[in-house]
Image (cartoon, rainbow, N blue to C red; front, top):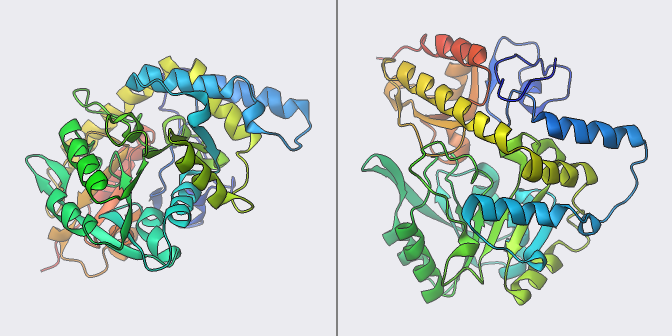
Length: 385
């Protein structure tokens, strides 16, 4: 049964669909709450457009830049969301943000150079420097004044190293969920410019702002470093089309854009037709669905927070963005936290993969029924004396 606009409650059975999230725990009574995709169907307009395309029956090669509606759809969305006017030639299609930030490592670093990354962080982003024979320079995060914040003094110190060439920023933070303020971004751009460090910002969760007082500011829109910055975005998280592996980079500077493209030549495939179509429809026709999803996620987050506050051994600070809850489980005093949670029937993302082993990341982009079941299992935790 298709979900009507604004109805995110029906359970969708994803077993036997080769779902990465669900295959991990096949034939085990464990709720998969890890991979950052949603448990409900995407917007009806996207489903309709993809159905029509499939019914055409021919799936040959295509050039995403020849889709006359796609680039204007991105431009419309970025202006609507961020008041950011983007020229068409700034947009570079990519087969996902993970290939894109690895392309940045290849384009602007040589073996032995340093790359700055936040900790905790999305594992592929955290590991990108090591995957490209580069030095991983970590910048720590702390909970200060009610939100997770990057240590900007440490950023300054490590950016000053002559070997440091690139900062892979994650904004909003994954897994912490903080949205960088303009003041913080001003410091970041000052540091990067001062030390000649290239700024690449992974903003795949940018549209999932749950705290309505918060505003996302794209790196490419910054007044000083924006022209040089590389901003990575996608419809994938917001509109639940991540399986198509399509994203885009916004790069103003012509030379930076050329180096970025060259790094993927012959390695990174072209953006696929279904993903480009889904992105186009998402950014043109799904505004109402998008706003209704945000309200649903806000309610799920409130419910989750209200329940966790009464569970001994757990601490959760609801974040400003993303549908990911970063939960401090250190109070449980468990040596192998992931195995323990799985023994209770829960399958979160292991905190150790993000750099903090005593945390767990729970995806709450699911039906309320599934979230309630997850909470009931979470309530079974006990503190090891």
